[in-house]
Image 1 (tube, helix red, strand yellow):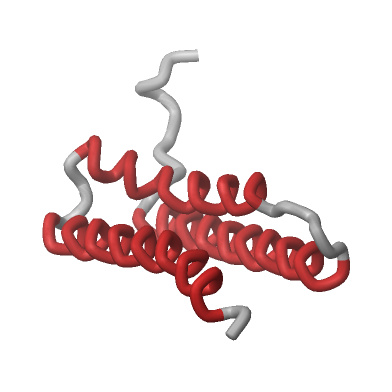
Image 2: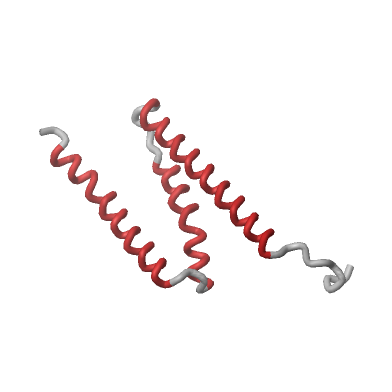
Length: 105
């Protein structure tokens, strides 16, 4: 069948509904993954959850990376995301150091 004959079935409303469904799906996936990590930390002691954290971080950053590569993301938002990532990395790196220094006092 010729593509020019087919009607257009996607308009702005359809795209907005799709994006909202992706947002809800990602939100439920993220909260479920965080709940699984918390369950493993609190009830399954001595169980590493770094693989789940890696899934969470990579999955959360894929849209940002794609939007940056395609030039869709606003530069001010991109700068804000970079600053937040740097602060999070510093907090994550300093937390074990403070725990070692001050936990047994």
